[in-house]
Length: 501
Ligand SMILES: [Ca+2]
Image 1 (tube, rainbow, N blue to C red):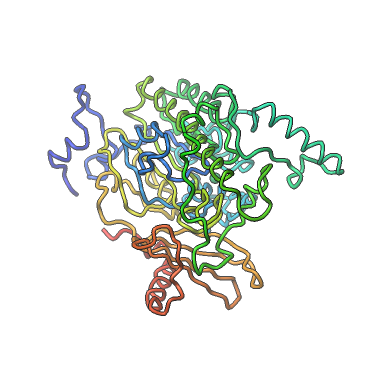
Image 2 (image 1 turned 45 degrees about the vertical axis):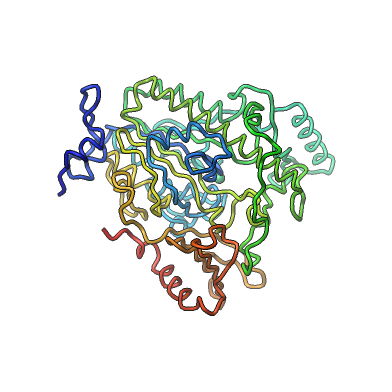
């Protein structure tokens, strides 16, 4: 057992300025005291499709003052990875603490209660240990909620997806066209989609994220006197990029820069790319081929506006925590469920194993901690055990992540050797396969295989010289030995990449 030095003691902010002794959750790591379950609240903030284009991640073009404030008080994980770059598989993995090959949730239809019925989810574990567990907005993927996770039923605001007269007229016309063709617009395949962006002149709470922040503020006032795990999920910057006009006006449209690598990585297999059907399904987007430069600029502008809109709502929750005097006993954790291609590699949306899809933001702010930027490799599957450890909640069996609480205490310590992600793909003329991808300190390595078929293909990107993954060097003869080594490391899996100290 280590004991606290005076420097560490002061560094942890334990000598409260107001003379009040606040027990610090990191004390348990230092063998001083176990946090008692219920001592710290959790404000859990999933953000849909948020890539790490955030001020505190070194992105000066975006305006995210509230996430920057959260980062300035907490730990900004600069190399956090989701386990599969699409909503439900990523969220399911994070919320069950298991990886996609265990949850067997690889799509947007399968519910984990059908594949791993007895799993205890993160909010459910808190509920079982003295916490009030409540969820609102997008926590699990739409339509795949898990009733037993919550102390009270999950709720979400009923808001229109599009808000201008022009959009409402367009949607009406598109629906009439579907009906005129003898089809039902309520059926998923005939559902109509409007413009991919919009800048309505409306108050924030006319749109989902403003309304869900209202709900969360109301809930904080209701639950403030008992330990809570409050999950409030925001749906922007997911498509369509709809944000009140004032957030669009934060940006100079003509100054918005397009991706500087609008091409597929050299020598990458074609199936590793996405056809970005999600964006193509919006009105006015090309059914094939690239978007125009002006469309690209408008999409990036919209993504930034939607990000700033969401950021402002998170700021309101942080302000309310302060106002209620809850900040000193509430851990805030914000994560984007996966990255997003904003024209990088000529792609849009997520659905790949590239760094642009699997690299996601993760910020945690623990009361009294030393603020830090942490470059260690961490995974979303680590969030479950981390929050349990920080809050004194026991770990259930079967978790496949590692608590990163030690990194909050010492962000430079040696940590995992690799982070793992995966994505299923139909490989032309071979069959349905899986790409397992691994990020090490230096490389991204991906192996594509199809069950029961003699098929194997690799991608290898050297981040030391190619941080944007523009050239696949897996087939170069001089890399043969490296590929063999990395394949062995990939096959050893997450169990082979655990922190050694
Ligand atoms: Ca998502």
